[in-house]
Length: 419
Ligand code: FES
Ligand SMILES: [Fe+2]
Image (cartoon, rainbow, N blue to C red):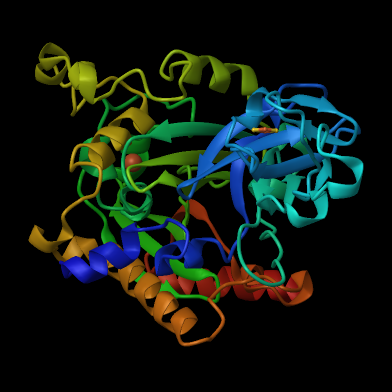
């Protein structure tokens, strides 16, 4: 349970808010690369309650500037891409990707005040199939070198989805290892296209025992199940500062990154990054997504249609929820149904909520550190000395004498010895 003040601190992310400053201290994914083809149209985006437009100039360089023209507010996403920038349709002012006004037609030559007009602009880069923005102060850090961003293209894929809740509800759903036993329960034998595994056959049906460990990049989360084959099945999931969850896909060879980026305080983008060591069947994943996500990037199952819940499906135990077999739609129900901003002053956290408590604690601590002038945690400044050198995300059977932390120590030790 949080106080109202703590809940506000974590959920308010607009310009000038402490929570917003924290999220702006890290690179954030803002679009799929596929949304910005060479020669494509500018893309209006709302990020962290700021209205912006992402565009490629006539040399195909990316820019991210304020959506509303600083002259009289017209929407620049309708503008023309020409002469080294984006030209407003209303009176023709031209802005480059750094937000400089580089042409002001109609103003007398001797009175032009281009130099006085500096529009909002943020650095952007393409990386790992996504486009990223740094909206913070000072020197930008590096984007973490995680396999779903750095592996060969055939081993990774990214989707941007829109969900109608505060960003923290998204993060809390993805970092919670206890919910999968119920929310995502499907019949034994169901192999998910997204994870490549039959979850119940691997983990059984009882909730896992959960343990956590602090790392330089966030929190390592151990979920240990007694598997139906009599062995112990371990998932090593991760919470990464400040708004990324990296859960295993239940196979030894892959994981997903789920980055929760506020649109504003009532909606967020969920970026789903897939990594699979053996390669990804992109066609199958895209098809499955197209069957479940509408053109507005929201799940077809949504509050307006009561998530298309089918009570017969539920009675037959074809699914626990009666909401089909697409896990993100189940998650979306769990994160949207508490309301746009969950009232955390009236909840009852149990022992399985240890990760939720931990995530909130670390976020509150990071905000306090930042407000006192210190550096926020988990920033990567140098890949050779990155906290992610200790990163591990895996689902695997372990020996009876091992537990999560001892398994991890052994594997990381072996990895270091091999370097
Ligand atoms: S409103 Fe954009 S140039 Fe006038
Ligand atoms: Fe889930």
